[in-house]
Length: 573
Ligand code: FES
Image (cartoon, rainbow, N blue to C red; front, side):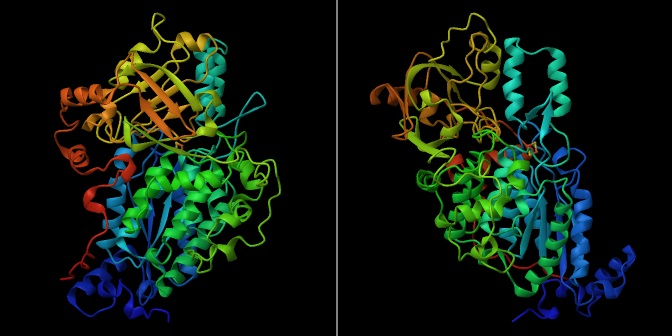
């Protein structure tokens, strides 16, 4: 039974006869709207993370207009709501410090205004998780318009991938195998259009997972940002949100343990970013659905990586789109999916992907010829990571999947950065580099420092991978034998704080083991001697962050933003 106009949330603001409604309506007339533009219509909030400071989102300014066109076509009334834009590229120390800020802003933008449903415009790494977290907490119908990946990079006939090839050629520059001029040419060729990173970084991973979760129109997440189909998808999403409002298709009807599993299956098949583990746990917890990081490991053990996309594979998101995109990819994984889950289209995931074909088997591989037979992600545990740590095995040199080596430990990023280019640094290719105090509180915000640079003297000797362990995150575009998200982090006194240069660490990814080879007594002695550090920020948002942020294995959300008793609608008087 569709909602009647007087049952809409916005009716309390715009439909009644009181003085306040008079004020609300008169101010919409002030903008130049006519009563016929909004009377009896659902109000659609377009939460837009466009910003001049976010190169990945420059097209969202016009995409918002294209969403509005769809809203008008379907008989809705669109209101664009600018929100903080989290530019992975420009924002320091890390956008992760602000994911919860954007999530809170989204929730309160919706709650405090006459919004019946929202279209979420984002894509650059933390933006879509944050927008969705906020919309889930607000509880109104929500549809995501992923920003879409940029076009392939190119340099002298070579294809360049965001991030992945920056790291690669940076090491070549450090080793002296490419020139300063070469490096500047790469700078001009690696980001050729608007849109997100086009490798399987965190942006492409999260956009794809949010589609698998059911929050985009089918196929939306893989359309290149510069493709005209992207604009048409935005308009179609505008039309659809109006229907969703009348159907009362709220996030709790889409989110379930099964739809979360679908997102994790997609993550495994894509060889997705390690950051997605944190975001999906946070999304699930907003909805009150239990999810632990171990679910990623369980599903990755049985789902092969079939998307041959960098950094785990060879190609890029543009290739993925031409190969059939997300619908074809999901259809190929259909035996692993819960096909009965509802999506924002009102149809099931199975209905939306039925018949979608893969056009290029070298991009979206057949299940019997995968990029990696399993293990897009592994969750490791041990005496220095009792609450877990994550790794992306397909992106690592296989020799490090079982390794025992001496530790070279750094207490901070600055200490590491000052040491790593020293020619007299005592380090061998078998060393295990350890970076501490880079977690949620220590970073603060868990910066993407986990792909520690290979020491210069080893780079010059041709070394391109080493075992690295930290409580930081790493970019989804990064690669290498990097064990990340060690929890609890060193900064709050987790046992990881006790690792010292000269210790020996053993890693066995097959056994999911991460072990500091010292006795329990010695570990206990070091823990007793550990002294807490001052909080990173004494005032402002940083102080709030430090007081409320959860550890990585719990999704890094704020404790006050989890599910709880429903908040009352704002009084209108
Ligand atoms: Fe925006 Fe990579 S910098 S998606």
